[in-house]
Length: 387
Ligand SMILES: *[C@@H]1O[C@H](CO)[C@@H](O)[C@H](O)[C@H]1NC(C)=O
Ligand SMILES: *[C@@H]1O[C@H](CO)[C@@H](O)[C@H](O)[C@H]1NC(C)=O
Ligand SMILES: *[C@@H]1O[C@H](CO)[C@@H](O)[C@H](O)[C@H]1NC(C)=O
Image (tube, rainbow, N blue to C red; front, side):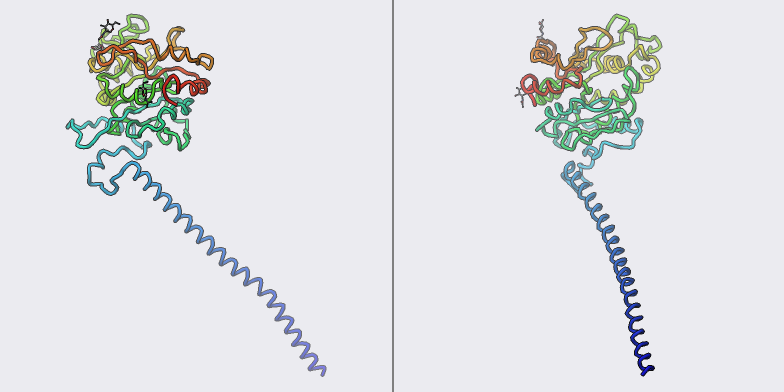
C-alpha cells in the first residue's frame, strides 16, 4: 500500500512535474511562434514598403513624362530632340552648359508647330516676396506661353508650394555679387538654362523687388511682336559713363563704343545665344571693368551695341525711379503705394515701339519693398489688370 501509495504519489508527482514542465514549455513555444510571426511581419512590411516606393517613383516618373512628353515611347521621333529638360537641376559646369546652350539649328523653318514662349528669369538672393502677386499674374495662362527660371544664392533652399508656378523652377546657382562679373555669370547662366528649352523665344530678367505692371497677355504680345530687344544702352559723357572706360579694352571696345544701361534686360533668342557664346568681350570686361566700374551696367549694353546695334531698342521695359538721387534707385515702401502713385508709374510715358510712338513703355517696375505686397495685391486688379 505504502508502495503503491508511494508509487501513486510518485505518479502524482510525475504528473505534477509534467504539468510543471508543460507550464514552462508552453510560454517558450508561444515566444517562438510570436518571434516567427514578428520576423514574417517585419519582412513583409519591408518588402511592401519598397514595392510601394518603387511603384510610387514609377508613377511619379510616369506623371512627369506624360505631363511634358505626350508621345511616350517614341524615342525615335523628333520629340526626343525638341523636348525641354524634365528637371532643371543638372550637374553641368558653366562651360558645359554654355556649350550646350549655344547649339543653334541651321535650318530656320521649324518642322513642327513651335509656339514661342517668354522665359521669365528671376535673379534673386533668397525668397521671392512677391510670389503671390506673380502667381496671380500667371494664373490661368497656358504653360505653352511662358517658362520660369530662378537663380538664388546657392545657400538658399527654396520651398515654393507645389501650387505655385515657381515650384521646381530653381536652376543650379552660384554666388552673384552686385557690380561684379559673378553677376553677369549668373545672368548668362539663367539665359543658358532657358535656352535649353527650344520654345523659349524671349528672355526677360527680373529681380525679387520687381513686379509686372500690365497683364500677361500684354507682356507676351509686346515681346513676341517686337522687332527689337529691350536692352538699355546709352553713351553717357560723365564719370559714371565713359569715365569707367579703360583703354586696355581696345581694340575689342573703343571709347566711343562704350555704353551704359540698366541691368534688367529683355533679349530674343538670337541675342541670348550671342551673350552665352561670347568669349571676345568677356575677358576684357572681366579684367578691366571692376568696381567702381560696375560690369553689369556695361558688359551686355556695350557688347550688343557693337555686335547687333540694329536689334536693340536701347531702352529698358523696367521702370525705376532715379529722381531721389544717389547710387541706387528709390525703393518704394508700403506708404508709397496708392492708386495715384501707381497710375504715375503706368501712365504718361512716350517711347518708340517697332518704329512707332507709343505710351506703353514699361511692363515692369521696381524697386518695391516686401511690405508693399498687400497694397499691391489690393490695387493690382484695378491698375495692373490682373489678380
Ligand atoms: C490685358 O490688358 C489689355 C490692356 O489693358 C486688355 O485689353 C486685355 O483685355 C487684358 N487681357 C486680359 C486677358 O485681361
Ligand atoms: C540703338 O542704338 C544704336 C547705336 O548704338 C543704333 O544703331 C540703333 O538704331 C538704335 N536702336 C533703335 C531701335 O533706335
Ligand atoms: C513721335 O512723336 C514725336 C512727338 O512727340 C514726333 O516728333 C515724332 O515724329 C513721332 N515719331 C513717329 C515715328 O511717329
